[in-house]
Amino acid sequence: MRFTRTSKALGMVAIAALALTGCGAGGGSNDGASQSAGDPNKVITAYSNEPQHPLLPANTNEVYGGRVVELLFEGLTSYDPSGKSVNALAESIESADGQNYTIKVKSGTKFTNGEEVTAKSFVDAWNFAALSTNAQGNSSFFDSVEGYADVSATTKSTGADGKEVETPKPTAKTMSGLVLKDDTTIEVKLSQPEADWPLRLGYSAFMPLPSAALADPKAYGENPVGNGPYKMAKEGAWQHDSQIELVKNADYKGTREAKNGGVTFKFYTDPAPAYTDIQANNLDVTDVLPTNALQTYTTDFPDNHLNKPYAGNSTLNIPSYLPEFSGEAGKLRRQAISMAINREEITKVIFNGTRIPAKDFTSPAVDGYNDNVAGSEVLKFDAAKAKETWAKADAISPWPADKTLQLAYNTDGGNKEWIDAVANNLKNNLGIKAEGQAFAKFAEILNLRTAKTLPGFTRAGWQADYPSLYNFLGPLLKTGASANYEEYTNPEFDKLLNEGLAAKSTDDANAKFTQAQEVLFQDLPNLPLWYSARQAVWSQNVTNVDSGWNGVLQYYNITAK
Image (cartoon, rainbow, N blue to C red; front, top):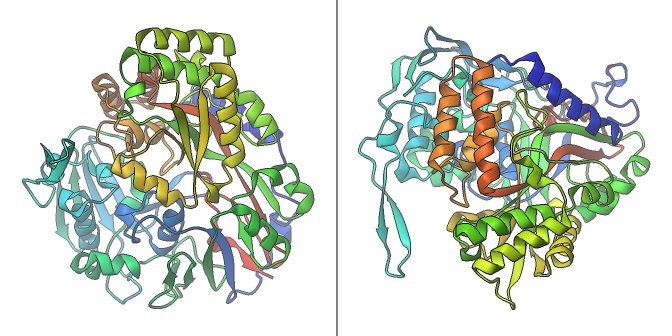
């Protein structure tokens, strides 16, 4: 999909502003002249935490599992460091009308168990991902394919506790629009023309699977076999709540060939000890810094640090099932809370200028970004108007005097300080009780979100799966979407997204996505906070550390000295 120069310019202005707030890659260790081949057989160690689920690509949609899956698998396409989609295992992806696609798969590649990667490896994996009885979290990424509604169908009933229960009830096991023609050819028919559909195919939900994965998904998820630049070091390489060990896949011949012997992801529930371990050269790289280190990391690691904008954002998400935030009173409360948060002050004081206050629901790092969406003024700090709006909500339905608004956050992500700052904003500007609700692992919050049992708001963030405005909107907020944990739904928003997908030009598509954001600013299903930049530091033992367009470190490029 091609984007307009005007839209891109808007994004570049914001990115430039963010880049000016902090240092770029430290010293010269990322410069081409100083790169070293290093020791290609040495294993590097990196910060991480326990993934939420077994490592099936179509059921991994959080960062700690995602960074492992991305290294274990190779798809039809991949994204270069700038976010450009390039063919990987696809020989070609062609369509005359944007609705019917013919995909030719390269021959001669294998999974690390020796099984050939064929067109069938993709077709079977996609049908497995879409089938509702398999309960894969990324199922909705296939909703464009004709026949998806049949395989993803569910039925709703009322349980003994009075709560609504959703049960899988597919009317077909395979998508009618997904046809295996031969060992190297896949034909895909979408339910409507979508010219940018191929842009998604580098995301992990679309990875191929060997037959063993379909035979026993649970066992496979504990010890996945892929076709990417790395493989699991051994049976039991995933030591739960401790680490995951990956080693180089010597048979891999793609564009991400490993320049080290492997990556061991060490699990931390707090970034502070990891930072100390980097200083002591006991850990090689971390991409999560304790908040207080944002003031000092450039001097602590003058030649070994990174600060780089990427396609990501941070939000406060509001469960639709919270009674205090439903109806007209709830709408006013969401507006009041948004205006009560001093984003400018928090990004300057807490984040030392390494974030930029949000002006929309997407990211300036994605082409098509618009920093002046109608309704976005609700993101501006206005304590007086916030208090006035809160009073209007109380006139309709009083806020319980003894109620404390809880803000869930994970301690492994360096979130405590800014959550405390937001809670203080709400106390001081709205006169309500608010406090952080700490969890040691991001996965614990995701489990509560999946179960629809959050007692209050939750911190959230989005690291783009593929470079498109739609990716910040559809997977998160479209009715029934994979990451729409808080169950937002608005038919007008869904309609505008679908019209954007079917648009004949990128300009028209982005115009529809902007209109869709106008609906979001009326509803405020979540509160955009700030745009992201990737900070990282590394030890004296490694070099060539950098991140890509989506903020993920390019672990395969890191070299040991």
